[in-house]
Image 1 (cartoon, rainbow, N blue to C red):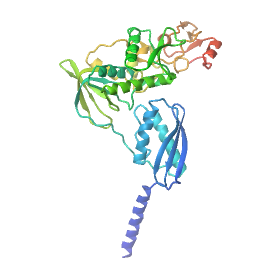
Image 2 (image 1 turned 90 degrees about the horizontal axis):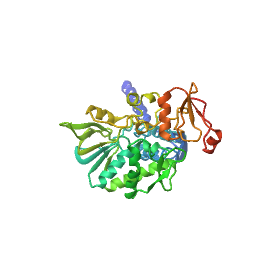
Image 3 (image 1 turned 90 degrees about the vertical axis):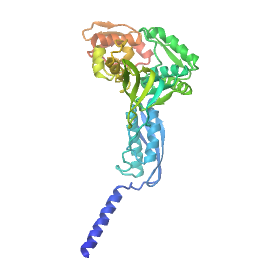
Image 4 (image 1 turned 60 degrees about the vertical axis):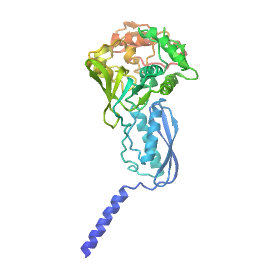
Length: 413
């Protein structure tokens, strides 16, 4: 009898210990504020809790890129509250913001009295499952090029489906500090004014504007916005216009291959995040995923002078469409033009190019001149083609730099 009692006591203690492991430590009800140093600066949250639950999460401050930081916030906060866990999947294309947001919330919970292992049940995210379907046009890629294609096609009454592998629309446009630049490369330069006029005719409030200090380039402007807001605002206008015309957007849904029959492309296959693949058969397929700045093999193949240079833009620029086009012997254009596929970094600082200010004279380690070109893209391209990853120096007048609000650069890379 004593042995049975001892066994029952031991079993009760075991069950009790297992149960206690699953309980959150008692918190002090209230609202707690905490901050994580995120991509664009401080990310501050206000977390309201009861004794054992997350009641609400609010963003008090977030300086991350509009459209990208927003995507992480709008998805993760509802998931954390619904599942009572901060261990949720990160948002595609907004990984760092996702991590810092979770860090800030965890810090607030621990300040309220939660343990480090509380609210830690893994939560997976899956995009909406899709069945096989048909469309007049399928656009692959939701950056500015893809948005433009979808807007134009939908405006002509066509059934359009746009696939984007990230969790938000806009692509590299969202991390640009200026509007779309009228590059000096053809055929882009000659088509630029017509494209802008077309968007204006559709009711999108943009206009051509000077691009001060950057040679012959012009850019677009949206009334009431600053540099970093221009393209975010433009993308939102285009999304609303495309949706009004019936475009279907499928986010977190990368195209995985082309469907080819009798030598013709008749659609694509795609796979929503966490779901099975499906197919879209279409009369036309428009590929807008040609950026390849983070694909080292493609950079080495098409832009060998930029091999090893700091890659700017989103990590999703892997040149998916280029690989598919090569597989079907398709033709490509402008792959040797840096500003069509590769965002150049200043060789001196590793940051955004500073070409265009008066007094920019670039020389290599031997003191030989490379370029004195005030055009944003061509100047950067010339430097990289000349020296690649070698040391370069930029000689400029201090007064010009101060007038432009520039901080002194280091002497070399």
